[in-house]
Length: 338
Ligand SMILES: Nc1ncnc2c1ncn2[C@@H]1O[C@H](COP(=O)(O)OP(=O)(O)OP(=O)(O)O)[C@@H](O)[C@H]1O
Ligand SMILES: [Mg+2]
Image 1 (tube, protein in one colour):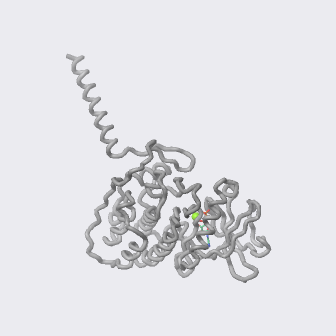
Image 2 (cartoon, rainbow, N blue to C red):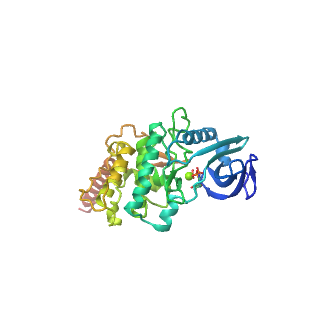
Image 3 (tube, rainbow, N blue to C red):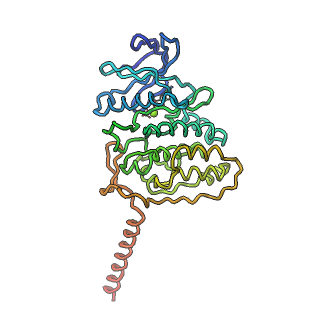
């Protein structure tokens, strides 16, 4: 892929100003549109996406998602799409206030006012996507952009799911730190999976750190599936009980126990007061309603397969078997000694 420098031209119309960011799928540049005399962001797709079999589909899904969500004020606007040979570009509204990831890195945990300011619009953007049967599938702080005035703009629909595009819809693709347990277990992502991922981002913003972290991606995946999150108030006592309750309900393991949709969360967040007297939420932490857990008990992240963690039932059987064997061993030793 061409690495663009300041002054380079794309399609005789866009003059590169500087790099804005880089992700796993693309590099994004700020450019001047010489026709409209406005600044735009140009997403240049990475060569490994362009040559990939599913690359064209990812490109199409992303541009169509942005186009369909044009009316939503909290989604990055699409201006143009260019595809010449191996050069694929998506021309977008330039959102230059950094990302939510930068905000968390620079300032740590957020106040309730900041949380409402970011998350109510995000619910709005995601509800609009879900109404169009688009599942974002990659909700994370790096994909939530901010204008210099602090308005959120949801970006990066590169791995979203939409009707008619099926080649990667069933795959466990995403960023493990924010992926829902069902997606990690190779079930199709649904709007409830976006609710889970947004809940993880909300947890991180309220507390300053995500709930399931480990050095190894597979360990993170296992934590999403079996580990109970530490209640946010135990880490940051200034989180209100009401906010903690919303977060925990968003990150229930079983999609059935989560909020029904983004609108419900938007209402709950809007009604939040800083000093509320809500009762603590009872976190279910169960996978009761899951019927189609893959029988091979393995999850695929990237290119490697990993055994899933033991469920509490199999854990109990394993512990019981070890104790039983130990008892027999003791019995045999005692017999031999006598
Ligand atoms: N419209 C935009 N305006 C300004 N900066 C942007 C814009 N779109 C993306 N960026 C910056 O570029 C980075 C990468 O963009 P994006 O997330 O779309 O690429 P990606 O390769 O699909 O990422 P991922 O690694 O999440 O798959 C963002 O995190 C952000 O910093
Ligand atoms: Mg991204």
